[in-house]
Image (cartoon, rainbow, N blue to C red):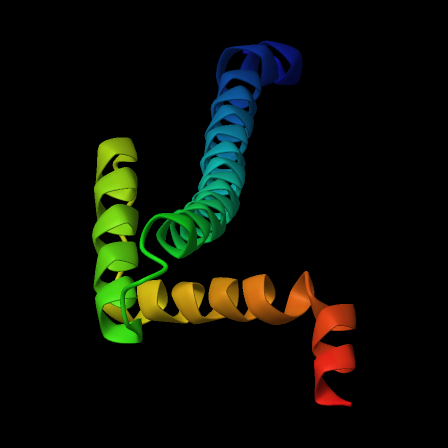
Amino acid sequence: MTKTEFCITYVLPALMAACTAAAGFFGMQIKALCQRYLDNKTKRDVARTCVKAVEQLYHDLGGPEKLKRAQEGILAMLQEQGIPISELEMNALIESAVSEFRYGFGAADGAEEAR
């Protein structure tokens, strides 16, 4: 068996198998990163939507009851999409959305009220 025959018979298929395995591994890693990014974006969007909805629908309720309604809405919407979320993460997203809702959109109004 010559070197060329040996390379064609054994080395080339082994290299192709290694390249295929590496491409599969990197593809799975890229998919996991993209999925994590999309899940986080979805969580932020759902939290914003639920906070806005609670502010509009339940403006007469107190803070703890609004928080409970927002948590219920977020859990329902994310479970529907199969996205897990911890209570700590959910509360942080709610606080961020409330802060954005109150201060991000009405920064000019808040500055005038402070005068």
